Length: 271
Image 1: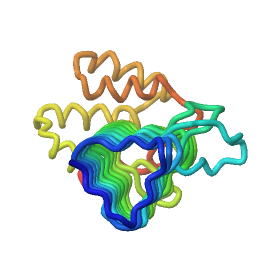
Image 2: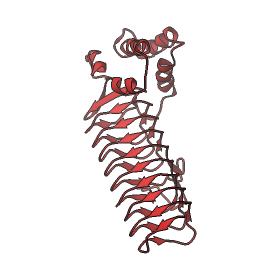
Image 3: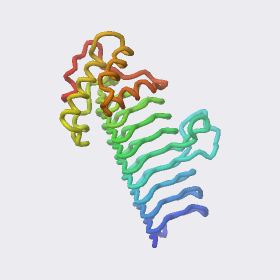
Image 4: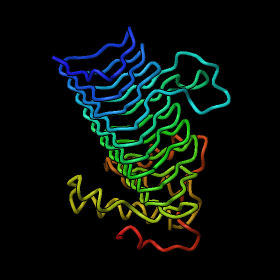
C-alpha cells in the first residue's frame, strides 16, 4: 500500500506503483509514472512524460521532467526515463529530451546524484554513475557506466564520456573522454587513467599494466595518432579493456577527443 501525504498534489492520469511513499508538498503531473517502492521525501516536483524506476529515492526541492532548456524545443511530448535504485539528492534537476534528437533523456540504474547536479536534455547516463555536488551535463551528452563526475564539473554539449572514467572537480569537459580515463582542469585535459576506479572494479594487476602500456603508446608514442590507434589495436587485440578504448575512439562523435596536455609525461595515470 502506498503512503501519500495529504498535502501532496497528484494530477489525474499519474501512475503510482505499489509501496510508494510521497511526502509533504510533492507535485506529480498527469503523465508521470512512479515505480514500485519509490520514495519522494518532500517538496519534489515531477512533471512531463517522466518515468521513475523502482526503489528510487528523491529528496526535497528536486525537479524532474521539466521542458528542455533549448531554444529549439517546440513543446512536443518528449520524455525523461530514470532507472531503478537511484539516489537523487536535494535540488537536482533533469530535463526531458527534444524533438530534434532522441526525444528522451535517459538515466540508468543505481546512480547517485548529489546536491544540485543537473542532467540536460537528450542526455544518456549509464548505470552506477555518480554526480558529485553541482556537477552538470549540457544537452546531448553520453555518459558510460561507472563514471564519476566531481563537484562543480561541467560537461559541454555532445560530449561522450567513456565507461569507468573520472572527471575531477571544477573541471570543464569540452572533448570526449576515453573509457577509464582521468580528466582534470579548466579547460579539461586527459591526465592519465582512473586507476582508483579500476582497482575498485577488481581489475587484475596484469590487466592494469597492459592498459597503462597501451595508454602510453596511444598518447605518448611516435607517429600519427591514427597509426598509434591501429598499432595498439593489433598489439592488444585480445585485451577487452584496451579494445573498449579503441572502439570508443573509432566510433568518434561531434566533439574532438580529449588528450593530454602537449609535452605532458605519462606519470599522471598513477595518481
